[in-house]
Structure formats: C-alpha cells, structure tokens
Length: 183
Image (cartoon, rainbow, N blue to C red; front, side, top):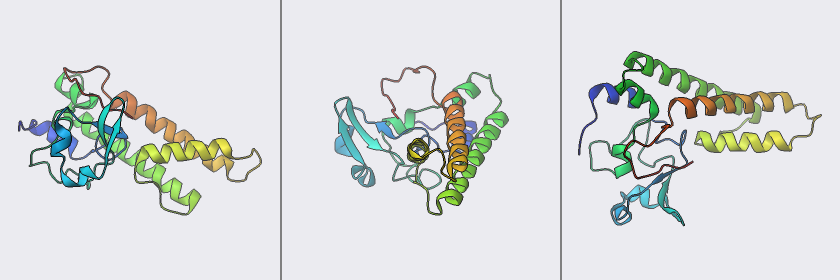
C-alpha cells in the first residue's frame, strides 16, 4: 500500500468529506473487490446497473479513517480531491488548503446547528441527506408558513456549501482513475 505524502495526510485528516457523506453518497468498487469487502462495508453494499458501490458515510469513518493502516479498497487509497490536486500542482499552498477545509467544516457545522434549531431534532448523519431533506421541506412549505424564512435561509446555506464543495473538492477531471465516485 502506497502511503500519501505527509502534507496530504495533514490535509485529509482534518477533512474526511470524501468518506463522511459530505461529498458523495456512494463510492465505487473495482471489479473483484466485492468478495473482499471489510465486514462493516458489506452491510453498506449496493449494486446498480452501473456497478457495485458502498454507501456513504463509510462505516469505518469516525472523524478519520479507522482502517487507514490496513489494506483498503482501491477508491479509498486512490481518491484525491481537487484540493489535494491543487496543492500538488502548487496552485494552492498547503496552509491555504488546511484553512479551506476548516472553513468548510465550520460552514457545515453551522448548517447542522441551524437544522437542529429549526427542527428541534437530530440532523441526518450525512450532508447530502440533510441538503435533500431541507430542499424537500422548503419546496413543500406553504408561502404563509411562519418557518418559511428560516427554512429558506437553511436551504440557501446548503446550496452555498454544496457549491463550494463541488468547486473546491470534487475533481474537475479524472486523474487516470477508471473508477467513479457518484453522488
């Protein structure tokens, strides 16, 4: 197993968006990986016409990867977000990348806090589910509902975070990777 450069690891361990359901709802398995899934991922396995996947958030992610030092699936060891690619291409300093991660983590935390304030309950575990739930609620609310302004404010924050996640973290082009990560 090839180890990522130390500077990349420092960025990744503060982030985890590719594993926790913030960027993607599924991760792609390579042909033949299905038979060797780690036990917790077996429970999250799904198959579609387009291939084999496991659902996000990853069952082995608890603030960081809990099996990082063990053999992992190809997608887990090969995926590199756009932020890492920018650092590697020297179009962004590592310190800027770390600050970007911190800013996005804070924005996501603010969204979760606002969700709990509005709905008075726990939020979905992953950002994609939260974003989709908020969008559905916002569309279904009557114009005269007193909660409409708060829900719309939350929906706009979700749209804003989704925009920045897509722009900053989702790869803009494949980097010799046959696999796809879908959302």
